[in-house]
Image 1 (cartoon, rainbow, N blue to C red):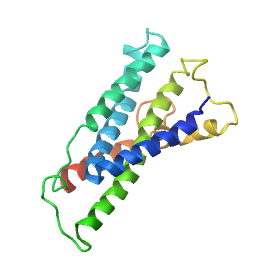
Image 2: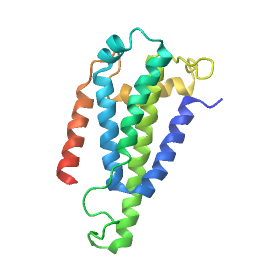
Image 3: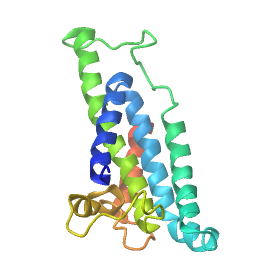
Length: 187
């Protein structure tokens, strides 16, 4: 059986490779969509789970939450890059020439892609956790002193969202505002 912690790293590496292929500009747009989806589902967690999903089983509640999140992530990854990317001939020449720019773009895209993978799997893991791992024995809660149990304190919504029962966080709100400023001004 694969631990949830191992899946976190697998997803980070997988999306890191995708980031290398797509480049920095596209990964920034995807990052914005992922942060927005995370923010929206976290902010409205009490309303969503307490009102709309209160009368359905936990496995279906998980599918609704993860499904909404994955739909937004899918559309975030379908966007085109802003500005003068490498595909349209609007390339900006700097010191080191176009090859250095492409290498830097790929490396930074890979790093941001890995962060996106961490955010995506971390959000799905969070949904599993708040719904009490509804797919036992296929997917079970981490053992008390396992690496996965310790890593549960490092998933995105626990770190930046102070996820102790929903309702929101100042840190997550600030990240969303900064992300929109980056997308609007820089891109």
